[in-house]
Structure formats: C-alpha cells, structure tokens
Image (cartoon, rainbow, N blue to C red; front, side):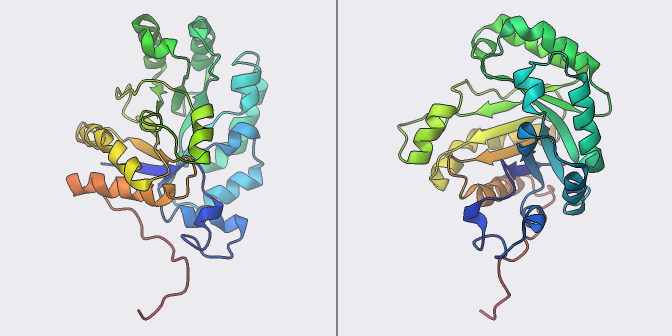
Length: 283
C-alpha cells in the first residue's frame, strides 16, 4: 500500500527558515524537501532539459523510493506539438536516466489549444515511446470533459498504452470569488474543467488546486480522501499533489493530506520525519 504526496516544486521562498534550514544551499533544497514529501512535480523540465550532472544531484538528494513526475519539455508538447520530436525526446530521456526508478511517470501536459482532432497525433506519439517508463497525459480543453465521445476516445488511446489521465482539480479554486492577488492570478491562469475521479491505471495522479486559506483547501479535498482510500484498498498506488495559489502552506498541507488518509488506513506507512529547520532546543 503506497501513497505519494508532494507539491509543484521543491523550493519556495516561504519555506526557507520556516520549514527548511536557513541558509540552505540550492544543492541541498531537494534533500530537505524530500524529508517532508515523497514525490514532486518536475515542472522545471518543461522549461529546459536539465544537465546530466543536475539530474545526478537530484538522485543523490533523494531516497530510491522518492518519485518525480517529470514534465516533457515545452518544445515537444507545445512548440512541435508531438510531431518530429524524436531527437528532442532522446536527449531528454538520456538526461533524466540517472533518476532510474525515481521517475514515477513522464508527464505529457498538452496545451489548452490541444483539441480532439489532435488525438491521432497523440496516439502515434504514445505508441512510439519506450516501454520502460510509465506515462501520464494532461489535457485542458473542455471538449474532453463535456463530450462523452471525446472523453471515451481519449480513454481508449491512453488505455491502449497503459497511460494515465492526469486529474487537474480546480473546483475548490473556482468555488467563490478570489480573495487575494495570488488567487486572482490563479483564476486567470488555471483551467476550469470538471473534476474527474476515474483512474485508468494502478498509478492515478491528481493535481489538486486549493485556496490560500489552508482550512478551505483541506475542506475542499474531503471527497478526495474517499477516492484515494478506495484506490489504495483496490491495490492502486495514487500520487496526490497539493497546490495553493501562493503555495506558502503547500508543503504542510501535502503531509496533512497523507496523515488524513493514514487516519483511515493505519496500515499506510508514515512519511519520514522532516529535517529540522533549526537547531534542537530544550523546550
């Protein structure tokens, strides 16, 4: 029984000193993060393929059971739109190879402009991918959520190669007017799509977007507790990423979600104890 939880990044200014030792060299930040959570979204790889030495440092800072959901680079998914990308993909896979089993899945996040008439291209791309990795696909166009024909077509394509449909849940974010600048920015940038709770594989992935108020965020994830507990009882190994517009409390909230699941399933292994943010005290 395995539940991975994490955040959208492994470093954040609000976490320094508050949750991480301070000062903390950049080369040690992932190590501290990995003492709080056992998974992370690899958004950084969307913007640039990392160097081999950088990836080796990621492996050195994390335990073998830590998991990365690595986003394919933007030139593959957004600029070339999955076409004529074999060389780019080979370079990316060579760069991330040192992570080995730490790669939970390679994450194919498609742009909002990716519409159902691109499904043939997606199917061809997925069929050409090497079989040693798992794959997770995220779509944002509402047609895949509101038209049963396209939803079924996408599910069939993903199912044919054992890929997962990444759930991006913004229901709580859009439940009520934004109350902060960061929430207003999230309203402008995040997609408004219906919540999906269907898993296609044994490794479902959920990206849950809450609010800047931690209690509203925790209140909003209550339906996910039932779903994740059911998945675990079915023998699945879900991964839950917790976001908030400012992400200041995301680290604590990710652990809180794990704790709330474990309260229902005590046989779930606890997360590791975090590296202390400061020296130990007597009181």
